[in-house]
Amino acid sequence: MGNRKHQMAVRQKEAKKTIAFAKLNNSPIPARKMRLVADQLRGEDINKALSILKFSPKEAARRLEKLLLSAIANWQAKNEKDDVEKANLFIKEIKVDGAGMLKRIRPAPQGRAHRIRKRSNHVTLVLGNNKIN
Image (tube, rainbow, N blue to C red; front, side, top):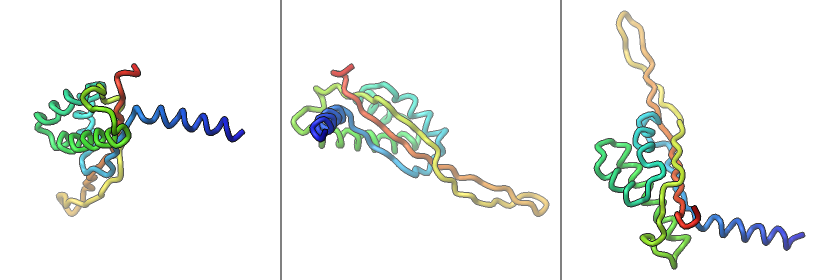
């Protein structure tokens, strides 16, 4: 029984070698604004994605560029003998989820108050290998 489990674990480990991911939690940008940039990257190869982020004027692009470089570094750590250029890495999955909100009060006319919701997000970026597809 232990042998079968061991073989399955080895198979899963090999499958995980081809993908690498990075997470960015509690980024203080609304998820809606982050998704505008993230949608441009989905499915692109890493060199094109880096150039898109480099020339994008949005603040979300700066954070996603750093996240993408982190995911590439994570892939290199898993595959030390392979070359990043020859691996044909691409952005397999990029998810932007809402995170917690900071709630603030802004004074409004006639003694009232409006609530300001400062939104934040979580981003998960998964790199894939084109050889498998």
